[in-house]
Amino acid sequence: MEIIEGIILKQMNYKESSKIIHVYSPKGLVSVLVHGSNKLKSPYLNLVRVFSHVKLNVSGKELKTLRDGEVLNYNSEIALDVVKYTYSLHLMEVINYFSHHEHDHEKLYYFILKIVEEIKNNQKFEVYIMMAELKLLYLLGVQPMLKHCVFCDSQEGLTFSVKDGGMLCSNHRQTSSYRSTTMHLLITLYYFDLSHPIEIHSELEDIVALRKLIDEYYEYHLNYQSRSRKLLRDLIGY
Ligand SMILES: [Zn+2]
Image 1 (tube, rainbow, N blue to C red):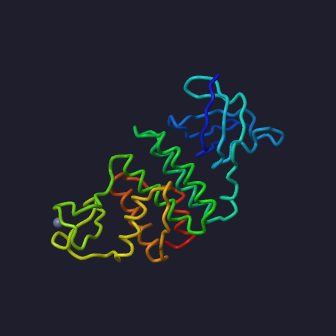
Image 2: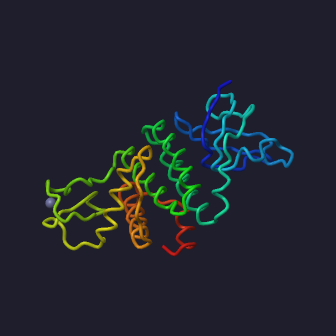
Image 3: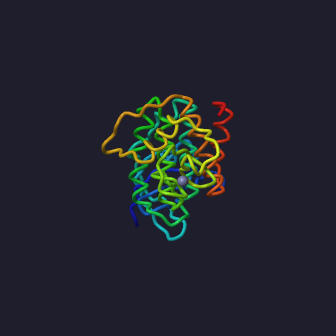
């Protein structure tokens, strides 16, 4: 027997009445088979929901099997708003996908628990999701260079270039397609300390621009885009 605490990133049907859940824990991703969880009288009907923060008693080696478990927090507020829900699914999909990379899972796990709280409690939840995606770039070792120009030490007129992986100074860039307020939001989120929060000023135009920047960065440097992000694009138009 083994006890696992984690957050559910994904659930898949398995055979007729069972499910396999992907649980993100301080040690990384764990797959757990939950027998009979699709049956209406199953005590684990709600335990397998995405976003649930759970504590599980499992056995087995590769694929673990659930013996007993409890939900510490359903985080069900996320599902009340379809945009918030789809946007949050996007984040879970990103974490799930990159959970196979070697990185600091413990750090990311505790960070994501805090991010989930911010998503639940904030109207401008998008900024917290983008914050998590930006910080994940650092854990994956493909973090953008933001302090000075990618090609020199200059901090003059810095603007972002996805292909160059960071900021370009006024000497090294061609034209800038980003507003300075978007650059400010990018830097604020990348360096944000959730234990010492400051107010985040963001206009929709900057949120949209930064959303596209992060999408392009993940596509260009990691060759990745999520399915939920495509759904979201249809839902919100950017
Ligand atoms: Zn330069």
